[in-house]
Length: 235
Image (cartoon, rainbow, N blue to C red; front, side, top):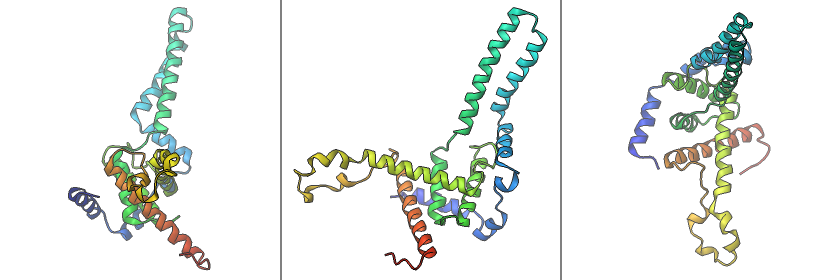
């Protein structure tokens, strides 16, 4: 259950946004700006100062090696430094590519899903991706307003959260541990706690938003496919 302060924060955050039709007219995602995904990645790397410094160090070392290649002692030192700098650069690139969102950003994404109830492949995911890109940039979480390349990657990231939630809920559910004793325990004596799925996060606020967003997403997908195939009479 959300506290009054949390409800206020969500309402204020929603009120600060322009109306939906205005957002739709001005939505521009990286896939619309860049010629390819490769050029997008290169731009993101170029705009990341730590990575650029890591890249410039090996370049400088290569130049120094060309100047001091005839001095054995210095050459050995420079070659070792070059190898280490390349390893550090690769680690930096790996960390850059795999960088994920913090709690506040994840909650922002979940609030967007709860508020907009996006359908499968609907324009709502473009708006959500656009809003998230602006949010991450405005709050200094990401160095460009291009975190999500397209609406599909934003949707995929959200589904990965839900998938991880369901997977961990299944693994950590106390019902798994109670299966062996269930036959000896009357069904009416099994408490609600015994059948409650546990979310991967120990944070109750994040857990509440995850559960709500998962429900909204499931309902939106069900409604979408029901409209796609109305001849199938589903309850």
